[in-house]
Amino acid sequence: FRSENAAGARTFNIGNDASGHGILIVRNSSGTTTSYLSGSGNSYLNGGNVGIGTTSPGASLHVASTTNDFVAKFSHSTATGYAPGSILLEASQATSRGQGIYHYNTNADKAWFTGVPYNVSSNKWIVANKPDTTFNPDVAQLSHALLTIEDNGRVGIGATSPAEKLNIYTATGRNFKVNQSTANVTILENDYELELRSGGGYDLKLNANGSSTYGNVTFRTDGTERMRITST
Image (cartoon, rainbow, N blue to C red):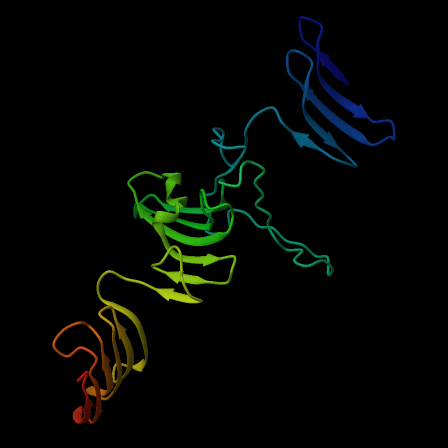
């Protein structure tokens, strides 16, 4: 079965290919094939954006869902290969272009990005966040990164160019805290204090914050100081 337009261009075909497999071909008004469905072999749609669950697709593939289930699912049953159940994000532009996944909540006005950010020559992977009343892809810039992993193995939390294997930075508050409970805490303050606590007070405190107690080391038990080493 086939159909032609008024100009004589063939625009629609249903039939068999040379191997006897069923095919459906859709062409534009000029006769160029834009959609090809094959019963055996490659099929393609390249006449424009494709929508699933929407009649106004805003991207090459736009999937819209109103259910409580997954919007999309990708599965692989082959037991061989390095990671057969995977998704490949590949860029073929300049090395400045990144690849990743955007997350945006229209009610919270929060944008997240995970992946290789813009303009880093693919040597960093980040988790980034940016508040915004509308979705803006510039959340993929390094300046919005909360966590940075470099290809040399260095990790930065609050540091976009980590200088060591683990580089933690904050302009205010505590840099680092480990605790089993509120009474057992290890804290690294941003003003270069290290505190080991047990119970309500410090058991060990090293201070190097440039104040009058610069370089002091104190040892405590049950919150009471037992020994002090000063910078003098």
